[in-house]
Image (cartoon, each protein chain N blue to C red):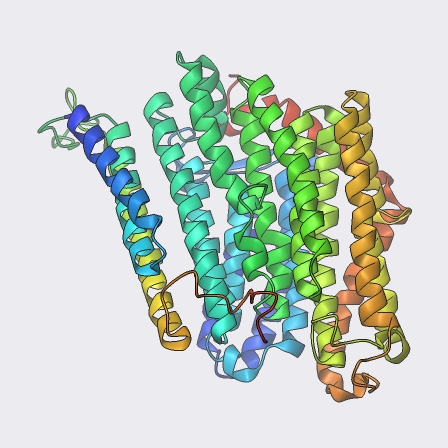
Length: 121
Length: 499
């Protein structure tokens, strides 16, 4: 299970880096989404994988009996997913507004904040 | 005891909610101002408590460390929270003059207060994942503040800022994941022992490097600083001042915290890298500034250059160096925010920030010229202003360690900083205005200029006070550095037991 997760994380990261090297900012954003999911999986895997043992406390007990899945990384991942979703949604809105105003998603052409030396202002 | 630690975070959040509800009314800006005053009171209370006890900690929701989220304040945290509140108040006053009504009704003050809350939270938390959450609170507010008001330039700058900061956040987050996987804890005090005890120290160094890269982007160190000069010259001046003052410093603070508290297993490796990174940061920043002719772009590159001094204080890792680093951190927040404020007022008077298109400010606005001199010369390290003491401590620490090249570079960068500052002085203040007009303060309404010059004067006064009476501040920095180098009290206070 861990090995499979590790491979999935590796593939996601590789695809993310490939996409993020593109000049098209939409591709960059898709890369960022993949990378964000790879990181979430890393956190999830770091809590060790347990199969079919939910972290539930039986009625009348103070602590779970026997080995159960680690609940903390799941809480962390949940937080990270929510935050990541918010940030990526914001970024998408930002790109859309940027596209409407600047008429481009090519990062090479986005020179409005830092115009080239010889270009007219 | 816990409310002392919670209030500096809760007050700006509460203010944000009220300010958002009142965003369409003129009362919104006064609510923001009142909230900033209350934040300053709360931070001062925290400072007094920390001065009394050394380190204070509080367990949230009664989950004891290392399981729950801990808020903790030592000398460094307390002074950073206090300086955040001071910068926040200065900016809230400045914004009264600068921010137009349509931007106010978009929720400007609410976002600004959330930013302050995020920064304060990052300084106070004792939990690594919680630190990530505060970083995100701070980031989302800063994203919105950067692009608020619209325009091609801001959107362009915003996209670059957002992209690079999100990548750095992900690096930081995966570092957290791996660290948890190895040690099984996220409490920073608990991590100190857990990291030292870990079997695989090589892996720890790898994780340490992930944190260094993640925080390095936030702190804008060489070679990760490209987002900063691409974005800091576009937003409202109040915003670029608070960004310049506080945001990169959160990165520096996080570096200082992690590389004195947690990752101290292989100092010869990690801190040696930091030394060279710092030297290159100082030098590339100041060289970049020399090539610019825009008021704010010059200042942006100088942020990078100054960050190098702070990380150098950490990298040299002696009591004197860390003391200089802490002193530098505080001095620089005051000075740099103030310089951006001055740039904003100069634009109000003279009509632009491009130094080729403005001039004559010395003749028409002598008060502004005098107020510019204070932070500008402090930045360059002129005695007896605050920057002199900050640089003096760092250079002394380098000389003590016989790091001659590092000491030489620190002094050289100081010299080049004077070059940039005299360039601004000569072009914006001394030379006549290229259009042949006198930039008159009367062009802006009195209400506007009064709101904008008050924080400039206040921060300049603080610079002078620190410059002439450095003794208590240096002593404070000395204790802060001692706490960083020997975090026993920090660890015991958080965990409640001797480690």
